[in-house]
Image (cartoon, rainbow over all chains, first blue to last red; front, side, top):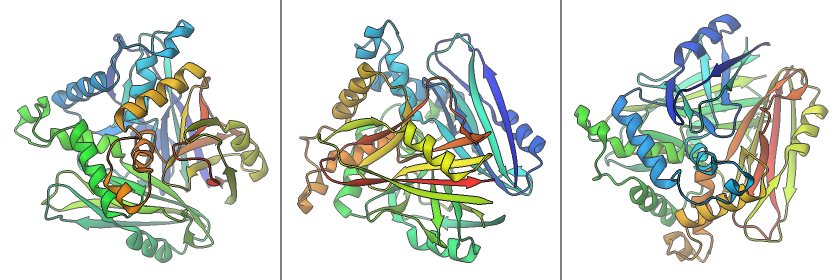
Length: 137
Length: 137
Length: 137
């Protein structure tokens, strides 16, 4: 069994951002040399997500509106009594998820025709990490 | 390490549908010959989900009501400015999730007593795929 | 390839509860002897979640309020026509998710600085299980 680990770092200019990271994951899989296996891609921070969906600008704004409607930034959160101001971001991340697991087949990401891997940032403007872990053969 | 890959195809008659695909995943695991490992089951399309819950007709309607309440089909979505009419389906899919990873133990799906694997379709009436990827030994 | 399986049992005193189970998962990974691999941690019941977020008391109450707002215990669910009273719990679990997959690196859980693994119970006061499955080398 082979394994490979890589960290990706992000520092978004805005509080919330949606970044297509498929090229970086594709490159990590190639570097791993794994032909058949799985790649786990997860946010290492708890106010960010990794998810898979379409890279379409209207949709990214729809997601942002949807998340802001379900967990508004300006609402009252007990978590913010700790001095934080990111209670909303902890909730938004749960809706969009922490991680994806993607199959590797023939040395490549085994994605559907429109599947793109995204980093969803809900409390940005600081350096945060994504973990890429490949296992297989 | 062994690996096995299979695609399942679906073409639902209704826009939204909830199909129990546990028998197909069970069969794929048997075909793989893997005794100890993991199986990844994911929608390959971005307006559908694979999730695990109960196969109870009332609950399936509860899920449908819940998703329609959170992301109504008839609401305004920027994504629909592209000519699509499935903005709601992209949101519904995020709530229900893209994928499940299930343990394989003793050559069988290692599921709890009520766990059933479902394909959740939110923009059907066309051919769409689910990926099954097994790794283990 | 090595594999290891363990069940954790819980019996919460309250209907809903949020338990930090990171120490148990850490111990299972050590017992597995796996140095490089993945650990799957999933609820075996369909009214409970395994998720990763912060162990902060205010946040746990924020999650509880959020879930109760989206899927109130006292609302009408068709599932409850079966004689059950836990329709809300099946919905809450979908929002928080069934499972997490965590990387194992150098024989340890490869978690970010604030990542803690939680068992989310939405229909407790009875014995329920979590599955831990480790694969790797």
